[in-house]
Amino acid sequence: MTEQTLDARLQAILLNGLRQEFGTMDDAAEADFSPRFRKQMAKMVADPRGWYKRKSRPVWQQMLRTAASIALVLMLSFAVVLAAVPTARAAVFGWIKDRYENYFVFRFDDESSEMEGPLFYRPTWIPEGYAEFLVDETGNLSLLAYKNEAGDLLTLGYINNQAGANWFIDVSQAEITKVTVNGVPAELMISKDPDVASGIAWSTNTTAFYINGFVDRETLIAIAESVVMVEIDPNGSATE
Amino acid sequence: MMMYLMSMIEDESDRRLFAAIYQAHHAALERAALGILHNAHDAEGAVQNAWLQILRHFSAISQLPDGEIRYYLLAVVKNEALMLLRKNRNTVELEDWAAVVADLDESTGYQDIAALFARLPETYWAALEMKLLLDYSNKEIAQHLGLSETAVSTRIQRGRKLLQKFVEEEGLS
Image (cartoon, rainbow over all chains, first blue to last red; front, top):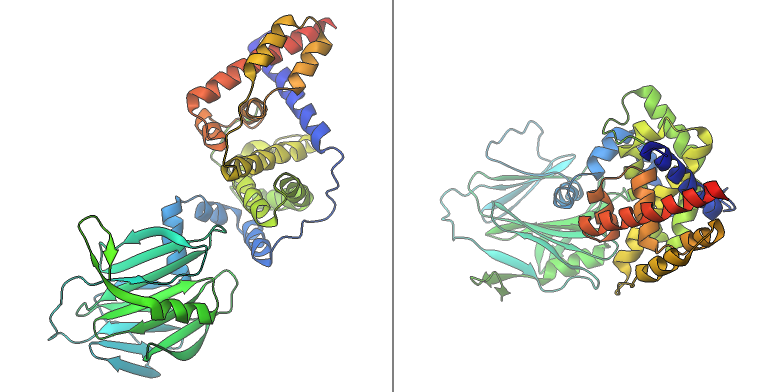
């Protein structure tokens, strides 16, 4: 018996085992899975190639992409190219927040202000079940990510005063509410799409913050209010 | 044997075929994952991972006879579900290959070998299914089983040997 013939026989045996295992399974009806899962499957069927590419990225890339999409698009730019007319503006020391129809821009507009050196922040409270997943404080935008067992991400992004820096936050899929974080005006963005997380954005005199995650408004505010400045020791540990 | 091809959905006709396969078999995959994991959230993850694997191997799967596609897809989702189950376990179960080998040496007929075959430890079955039916690489199998590639090779070699004896005995029976 050649190896090819043997392999064909072995495949037939394995296939027969699967027939015995699943042959009598009642599979006429879909399982009672979540709307979020059903939406994912609908996206997959509509565009299998695109879905595959997105889902087969390495975890860290997916995390960054998710962070970007839930925070809705987040980017730094050193060129101010805005055609729309701001409908609202809030200035808190060096940070100016312009609100457009579909996005916010945090813009640091105080070139006379001296950079105080790197400032680091941590939330002192996060919802139960979340654990630190990633800390990246090497670039202009610092990003901390937390993940729960279900794989839901919670991220805190912050940027210290950067003259000329723009931080765009796409809010086209969110319902905006004005709230406060420790007395500072903030924008709460509750997502209308179950695949997109909600967020909260605010700024102090030195730093603009953005938190997002698949959590409710009270939780977002509670996390935001727990954020404190910390010192980072040479081992990377944070202390208040 | 299924060929591992990276090309998957090339055009609109492939997309329609994929949609038809999804429509025909998605409920079976969901039920199978739920039957193994008994938890909707984990089962959703296993099914999603299974569709990723199915897309990766779509060129080969799309050429299978209609009657076989269902079982190939079920093999994919079963192995994704079992991978999650293994990850969620806090302990590693010992698999008694030595007992199988001892019994194999004493087995003289088709029925004996068939009984042994049914007792093959879980990771041996899984490694053989993934290698021979789904044409996964040893690296992919190692990731699924939480084993080294060497351990995967050992399982495939041992499993082949047992299956070969089974086939030979089957031919004589």
